[in-house]
Length: 474
Image (cartoon, rainbow, N blue to C red; front, side):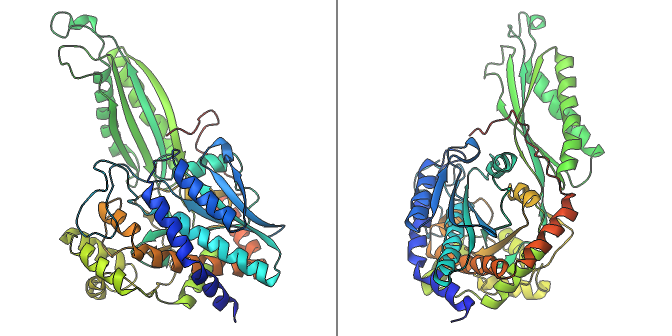
């Protein structure tokens, strides 16, 4: 058997095991830094597969790693497992039907992500054992991708410093290697403190924290005209000081996301946002406390690693979906809006002519892989994989775990992430990732090339956007 055939066989042998791991995580959805059951499921699976497990990485209870082997090279796989709020949904259904109303759900498919990366790490480990190949395989359990930036804290503490190559993936509606960057982000709480008073009898004695927060937002909205077009600033009130109009509100907190294509751009915009807050506090004679909650860097695709990964994907070929998957896909696709379908066409238009994409979208489950393209654009979202990519040559792929046009962070995502569609996507992604890791073990000159590329891209410097005194928090 060729190495490719062996990897395929090794993944297929344990497909049911990792499908059950994915489902078990899906059944216990937990928010960032609180993924105690999910982390235990993955750690138990690592130990069962012969990895040595280390818990509490970077001082985070739900961050861990599983290691096999020793010496160089060190090939790592990144796993995630946090869920999203209010996205509970029964698996495999094409109508909205929560398991528990208002509860969490895996609306980004991180249950599949964590299990798929673990399946890849296990297949590579098994291949190395079988063929007496030296080297180290590491699986990193990375918590709180959705809002806590777990990997950024881990990178700050040097968790990835000894790694040669980092490989990961994300559930999606296409099979491709990610060739675009992502937005960097700093997440900040602005707390205003004022003084209560009777709003009718003695308003002059009060100092409104809510006024301060609102004035800050007005200032930031004017600031938008004077920052780069590609920056994004969003805010949401966390505290409005109470519900009584006849009381001057003495507290208010507003949460800000400050995003831009590069982390250095975020760091330039951030102090200007702070000045808006300071000005609002001066105007209202309130006190301001600025609390940096977390942050993450932009993702830097490593062309050397990404091209190898793409070659492996193209060699593996198309995904084969079962009749059960196709039935679920039909049901879910029927729930999509016209705008969802248009978004699916737009996604496919990155890989084929628009006319062809408009027809292809009605296949619902996209089976073929698309060649790697490095594009000078960025995805509209953010990911803490970016901080790993500043430290280690990194590549990530997407694999089909849902129908084309499925909205991100939706009940449809949750439904499919707990279904057989995800199981088949997990196996496909695991094969590509394991094959990729093996290529770098077999040709270690590629590792040198990848590291040289990273040094050119970053100048050999990683400045963590989270200050040292900031601790992870749910």
